Image 1 (tube, rainbow, N blue to C red):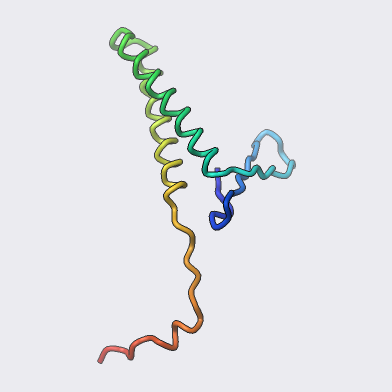
Image 2 (cartoon, rainbow, N blue to C red):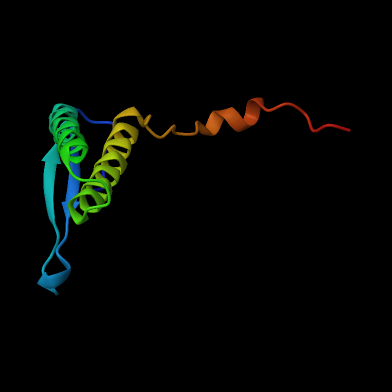
Length: 105
């Protein structure tokens, strides 16, 4: 997922399929509200996976799969939180260079 323009009220996400070959990636509009909804869904899925893991036998294959799933969901949640908290890129004003201090001696 890649946000293209965080300065607007919404952003574009480029979705690509490696199996598609020569197809052009499609752009999808994603609003911050959509990202919040995805975060809510992933948190509920993570809580459910934790509850199931606590009920599973220790050392079982199901427990190991759930541990990897919970770790993956945690990573996705941290990436989405980063995308929401990301500040817009600052544009450098060309007049700023004229106001710089003199070099140190």
